[in-house]
Structure formats: structure tokens, C-alpha cells
Length: 228
Image (tube, rainbow, N blue to C red; front, side, top):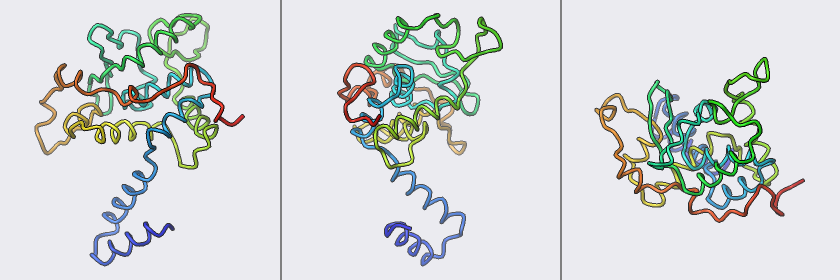
């Protein structure tokens, strides 16, 4: 138990909070401690094991989408005219739009040019029972790609796909985005309010730049700081 966690636990117990509330507070602190810095995110992306793994990490960080939303992403969901990515049937069966980073668009175009065969429906098709199958990829492959990149980058924190979603939100907040915009980008819905009737306008989407655009990335996944 770290000194900070021990001190916080003692304070929560002094306030006579319930065990459930105590666990919630402690878990929130643990998750915050795992939120990567922009520099650590950059190392993670640069140490992706392959160009395909790299594009997955880029999408997770650039959009804040969940791993389950990434594997369901379709070619038609990339709206280059409006510079938006459509996330369909996310958590709670809700659709939402997120910003399409210009850097991410360039990377997606590189992925498309190198893809052979070209995807038909899903942007990242999986392996079906036959060669012509058009099915989503397995979510475990994304999880493994993130963990492998974290190991190659020498990151000691517990990094998983959801970590990049936390980074997306935290780095947006640190760059000045308002909480309401971040809430809608993440697809969070508070049932106690009327927020589910509100929609994020295109003007707000364009005003909220993806945190990916602030990184300075070398071309390709190889980096001298990555472990073999």
C-alpha cells in the first residue's frame, strides 16, 4: 500500500464513510494514478509492435472510444467531409459523434493504402470461418496490442485500452475543454438530468481538438526507445 493510499484510507475511515463509498474513492485515485502523461502516450504509440497496432492506439487516444466501439467501427463511420467519426450503438445503445483528428485521418489513409485485401464493411475486419467473411475483429487483439506496446515502451503503469480513454478525457480537460463537451464526447449519460436530450453541435466538435494533434510523432511504429 502506497503512502498516499494509506493516508487517504485513514482519512476516509476517520470520516466514517461506508465501505462501498471508500472503495469508490480509492478506485478513483488508483485510476487517476494510472492516467498516462502526453509524453507517456507518445512513447506508447511509438512502441506499437506493428502499423496495425499503431492505428488502433491512435484511434483510442484520438477519439476516446471504447475497445468494443473500436472493433465495431465501419468504413462508413469515417466522415471526412465533416471531420467526424460516428460511433454507433455505444454503451447504452446510443450513437454519438467525435472529432476526426487531421493527424488520425492521415494515418487512416496510410492504413487504407497498405490494406490488402481492402476492408469491405468493418474498418478492421476479423478472421471469419472463410476468407470472404466480413466480421469485426476480436476485442482481445486490441487489448493485447496495448499491453505489448506498454511493455515495449517500458511503462510500469497498468496500461489497457480503457487507459487511453481516460487519457483522452484528462488531456482534453487539461487543454481547456469544458466538462459538458467531454461528457458528450465520451458518451456518458446522467439519468438525473436532461443531458440525454442535448446534442453536441458541429461547432463544438470543431472547437475541441483531439489530444493526438498535440503529439510529435515520428512516422512509423519503430522507435529507438522501444525494447526489443
